[in-house]
Image (cartoon, rainbow, N blue to C red; front, top):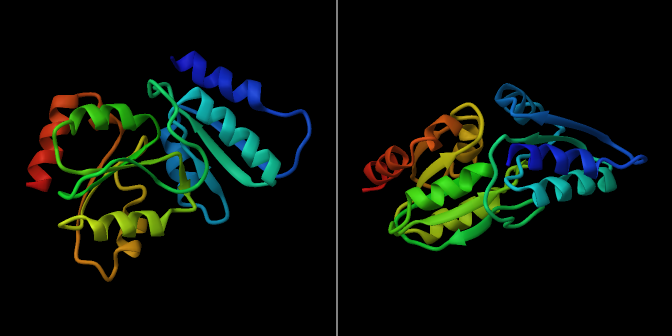
Length: 191
């Protein structure tokens, strides 16, 4: 699947356009760095179709954008653009899965009463989407799973929920490799 992700990115690059577009292939450090750099739109698509959409939208809109192309991919595209999409509804907490972490998160949390949000764009951070999901849950417990260094978006979660009592568990891409362990970590945190 990794060649599909890279191919989707390269096929999508237009010959003309505005803005600045950078592609990073599997470079977690770059994703972490651009996510911390003000003024950049940061995409972490989880499927080749989402890569194409992110590249074309960034160029069309003249964005200063970084598109993280992962070696992993979800089985199907979910959505594109800014904002967090609700993939599963639940009341026992919120799991925010970024990019190609979605499929392992869905398998690991099967049977849990949690809301699963999916993000392909991490900057700007969808404060309204996260706050809405957290307030709709019985407890504002958040599990953040990103395809980069643990805690890359933890500060944004804290700022978003500054007036909402909450707990936060941060996980990275390496944590999705062992799905039973991922499921245990989420269950232990949320119960």
